Image 1: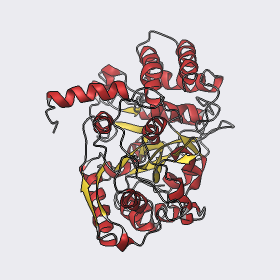
Image 2: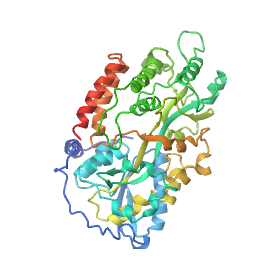
Image 3: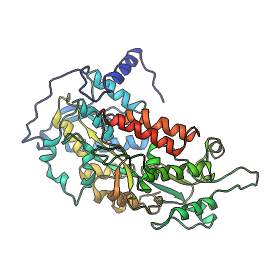
Image 4: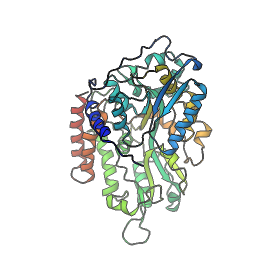
Length: 447
């Protein structure tokens, strides 16, 4: 249910959008004295010694918020002298959090994606967690943690959040529709020719009225989904998403990827356009579309679908084929009055006990590899076949977001307008990529 906003809040929201947009320090945000951190003892206090009242904010479905509450309940048992006020926000999350920061009422622990943290760190709003990590060496045990994703949670060489986990974007498929069409399930070896042959058989006019009643694949026009196509063809946006110095979006690989996506909709008709989407309103979850590219966090929402489901990847036959993933963690604003208590909660989310609770719903592929690949998680009720792919794919995955403070702004102002024009038939793939290349180069120069 959407909440009504007061006039005062609306004014603050507009101010937040202005004050927190740039890449430099935010001079308009309230400046409070940052609590001094003893780097030698940071994050080493006995749980019984940690005290304070802190606020924690996150967004999510009912299942996610219930999971967060379960973690907080477990945290309260370990840290009896820390009171946590949980303040979930589901509407306009980023705007509301930034409004709270601007008003000097920032939560002590904030859940979010690295792209949020990069922006806030560039404005000197976050607590440097490096000494806390250095005093907790267990977090660097590569046998336990997927440390290959840690770089996304740093800014200017400093750790700016703890790490929750990451979810790759994979191919969900309806095994029952594959069986009915006598199509073999996707394998690691399948090619784009195999994919198109399967799509042809899975696109069906069931009643002979000239309208498609079942499509092979969802249109998947979201930015993350299109990056999945680009990654499968071996394309990339930058030379290094964690340290971008060169824009590489206008490439042969990306042109092939976007042309494939475009052709699936407008040349072959294997994916519905806007008009077709009105016919198959049930989409993948309703059994009217055979395949869908999405984040594996969808497993929890799809656990109750009325068909057998499998998990695979788009064809990965290019030399540099890889996966993309969406990462999440917990940052601590510098204004917290209780940095030890805030660290205790943020780090508890990365410790085994917290990770087991977070993983129990299937909403996140935890950074703790043993937890993520445990039998309880991989074979949870309603999990798709080949559920383990959500874990193994992380070994060859890159962050879906580039490590740039102005990343969200860049995607809104450069990427999306060009893709919208491509989808509407106003430009070709080549023209769209040229426009995106020029826009990304301009935005990269601002970093």
